[in-house]
Each structure stands twice: as structure tokens, then as C-alpha cells.
Length: 124
Image (cartoon, one colour):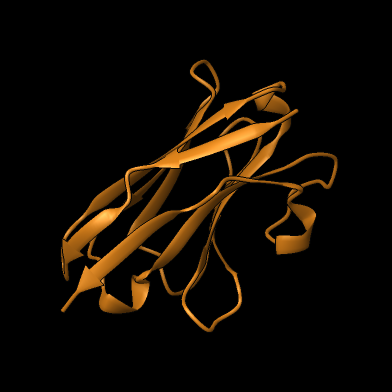
């Protein structure tokens, strides 16, 4: 059974940085597309970033492009989200997710495995 565990969230001032980490277990990590999603209070869960199996291709939401960087380590079974230039509108619970057998995708419903989420709060 695939399990995902996020860490690294917290409170940061606008303009600051955070690095989220996600530990993957219970499967062959390199066979999964990995993504980060977020959900703010009262809003739907939205795509943030995704990375393909080898790490050679990435995709970002327009709202974070140029500020966030997704990466993965297929030896350590980890995926990361480096967040720079944080804004108050980035405040949300951030979820790590894994997709298997759906090809290269950024659609929420194509990700069958989810972590519990980690809170990111950006103060103005």
C-alpha cells in the first residue's frame, strides 16, 4: 500500500521560502508521477506542480511558475517542493500525491494516493 508523508510546512513572512518534503513508501517510486496540490479554506483543491517518473519533465500552475520548483530523488523515494517568494495567497494545506497508470497528468482525479497534508501559512 502506497503511503505518502509530507513535512516542512510552517509559518513564514511574505517573500520568504519553505521547502516541503514528501516521503514515499509501499511501491516502486520511479513508476509514479508525483504532484503537489494545495487547498485553501473554502476553496477546491488545486494543482501546484508535477514531475514525471524520471524527473526530466515538470509542470507548474501559472500562479507559482518561476517561484516554486518541484524535484524528486528516485534513490531516496522523496519528492520536494522548493517555494520561494511566498505570498499570502499561497497560504493553504499542501498535499503530496502520486499517480500510477494515468500517464503524464496534472488532474486531481488522476492521483490515487495522497498524503495527510502540511499547513503553509504566509503572513503579510
